[in-house]
Image (cartoon, rainbow over all chains, first blue to last red; front, side, top):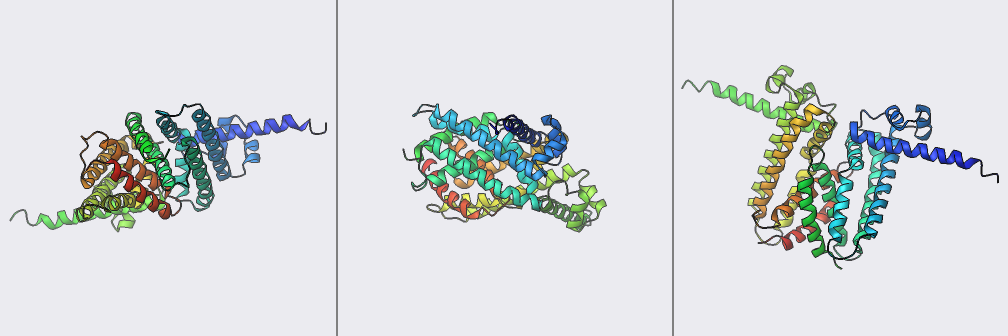
Length: 200
Length: 200
């Protein structure tokens, strides 16, 4: 009984945190790192600046939590969508296509602004470096899982990592112009290359 | 005879321009877009600010010319090194490795700062967009040439473009930490996959 009154407040706090994380990614993707202050994110989320600072004492805390949270959300979506796919022809292409969608969406764009800012800003670099390796490991694991391959098989690890690097490159190529037509051809062809090279 | 006195001045002017272009790429890679003003580049190049502004009226002019020039220099180096390679085993890996070196060097780092800044700054975006497509076409052509493949063969175009996207992704992965050990394994493995999939 004594726990009950706390629940709604915890829910509200969690909802506030989530709104801030989503707003941080949106703002980074839309206006870049320099223009994305905690105050800007709080305004976008419809949260008071004080509440934002209660959840995230520094900009770097907010950004790191935002990219981590959004990556978890996106990878969970991919896992769910992939689970609904039939096996056989077309499955690999659907997976590579979903992956390319993640890397051309606002989450990758936000991460890109953060990575580039971190490359010339030392305290941010340390924080983002550990985030990057965590995010990279999660994406790698999710891709192995949905492709239904085992990285202990020689070559599988490098094949899958190369595909993740390609997806990152496709994201970069889509930054300034709509690259979707070229991307679709590459996804189609590389899904075929993957099917040929991955052991089934 | 009347042309002779002009030559040394033209040479000096060309040398000044070249020093500015190299310094612009170095500065972008080292301190990022916001901190790379024309004055900073002029100082790094050991050129007066007036001379710098004579060559490049705006920052965007300077940056676009710098990335274009350095890309030409790097691709010419790759063509030259590749021409010295023997055919057969090891050739593809040496080429993919040289490509990965370009995308993890200061030129790619400079371009990355520029691309990301352009994504939220409209006049810069227009200028960088045309530069990006020119640079992309040049890299594509150079890679076809050194791999000795013809893009009219079905699938070759998409294979080669995917490799360029992978190289861009490897460049991003090297931005905050030394990714060379992982990269070397991916280059080795994907050179093998390329040899299997490209028609010879």
